[in-house]
Amino acid sequence: MSNTRSEEARQALMGRRQRILRLAAVQAADEELLLSEREPDWADTAAEVRDAAVLDRLVAGERRELAEIDAALGRLQAGAWGVCRACGRPIGRARLRARPEAMVCLACAEHAERRFRLS
Ligand SMILES: [Zn+2]
Image (cartoon, rainbow, N blue to C red):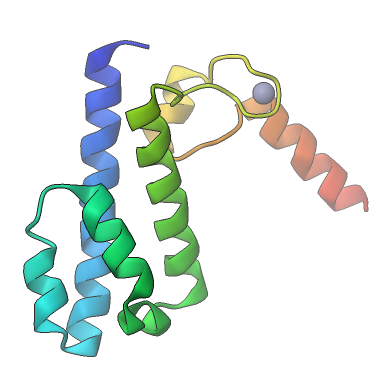
């Protein structure tokens, strides 16, 4: 996994994460959270934010997206980003660019979707 691609993904994920949190903070008029989001270390704020009542105000979709983003940032930090969790093969470059938070490769995602539709 090249460092440039990881770094690009990290920045894209951080940007989306910040947008979601800022939206939630604005909705909650939570000045403290708005200020804490300037803190560049995502791991610290992740723990804070998980406890914050402000998360209750996020709709389910945003909350799930935030969880996916945090998980992807964790994999990036652990050096495990970009590897399919189902088959262990590298996730395609185009898919990662479109969805840096993807946990499975396209083949596994399509396989899971087919199974879901059939059931
Ligand atoms: Zn796979």
